[in-house]
View: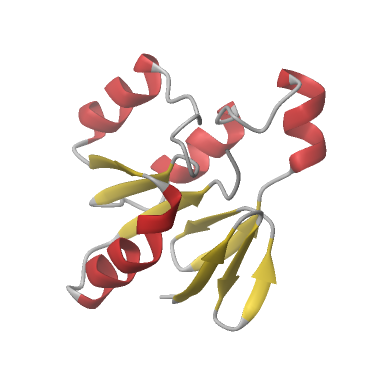
Length: 120
């Protein structure tokens, strides 16, 4: 599984490589499609349908969402319900907490899919 190294406003370092915002799914790092999100929603403060499908794939035990520095990323009830229906746990943390939480869960051997929102 990838390791989160560092988080700062607008940037996350995963396995030594810098990204703006990412999904980690089944051990793969996928950069969020900022342009697509802004075209569809005029913001990156939502989780796209394709991102929800990715987060639910690969049979995760836990879906960890870093919801931004002030927690502004919106998590729709429908997605929360889909996570529960699938038998996974949804954990939402403020972005500054995600490095420690993600790495702890992975070290414990948990199957974790993660979305890291690095702003607001």
